[in-house]
Length: 145
Image 1 (tube, one colour):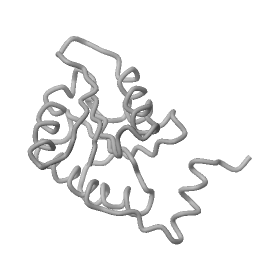
Image 2 (image 1 turned 90 degrees about the vertical axis):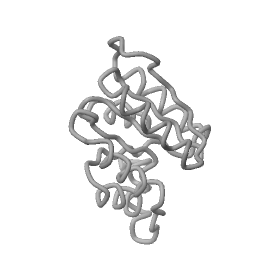
Image 3 (image 1 turned 90 degrees about the horizontal axis):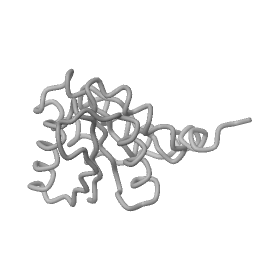
């Protein structure tokens, strides 16, 4: 699977560790930055990640910042994105199964690397259930007026 990953400076170490692990697992990984620990603004990287997933360059995205909150908000500004901030494998599974999440957000200051890997695994291995969930997902993309 082609996965895009981006972070801010607070999640640089987690981003690097997850990117390396994902490549070892056989995935193609596009690391969208940042390249070093200099202070950056998470929206810049969230918008970049959203664009790459929304245009189909990557199948899924992983967004990381200190809490996961800010970067998930920036990713979700793109109407094609359904970025879910999770903290455990069950929430990652449900984000895919019920909400067809195409991006996973994690907080590097709140989640350890082993838990992050478990969340990413659940996110990548779970398929969207469709059915009764599809109409709800459609409303996320095309909100009623």
